Length: 295
Image 1 (cartoon, rainbow, N blue to C red):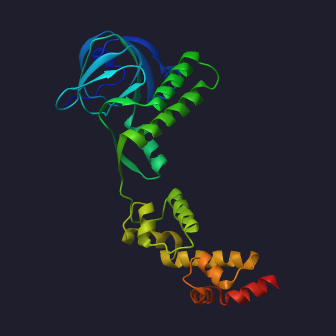
Image 2 (image 1 turned 135 degrees about the horizontal axis):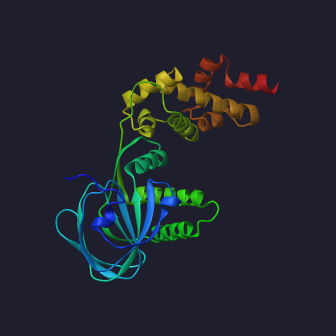
Image 3 (image 1 turned 180 degrees about the vertical axis):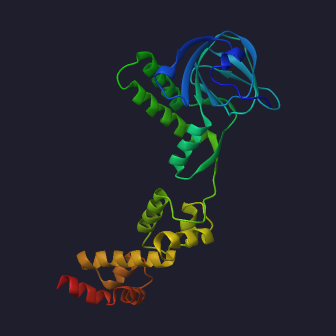
């Protein structure tokens, strides 16, 4: 496999009339270009970027080969073609067409995937799709063209927002993402800690398993327990019990619910379980806590 070609080099292999370029408006790692092409039969070397083609005007039979056999379909406005990076490709069509190209850098896609899924993305690969009817991408493409062409106030901000929207949409529907395995040493990232704590709060009324919590961070249960102890200074089970007791305290301070009802709402198996854990952590019974607080 030869060296990857850049965005600037692409017209050498796919010659066409350049109608629009976002380089003056948008970010370099998500670039938009609009081309008008005559009928062509071309070979394009592997690219350093992911390529998304949105057909704007004209309609034609499109033949394309990436690896293996040729694929053929009919394309026109509203159709999108996706091509992952690092693969050479042959293209052949017989009618005039106008298209938008999205060139998206691997670094930008990995960063967006990490933020979207809150996990460190190691590798992103787009599905090889010759024809997809996607009105969302068509709409985003039209909006980006308008922003670049108009060049009005806030254009850069709007363009970058659209680029992010397009990238998240592509990641959700047309990409395979390989994530880095988290390190079992050290503390959790702040975002992971928030996810863990939010998950516990939202599921406090039931029995939360170690496997559930480990899956949030893509850890094995053993890795998670070790990392959890470093971060919080206690085992996951002890932390969950402390949150259950805190939830019971909230009910005891503001509601006149029966203790057996509070026990179930706070995630204890029964009132006896609540009494035992509550006394161990608070050095008093739930009834004594209620009297002390209300009295």
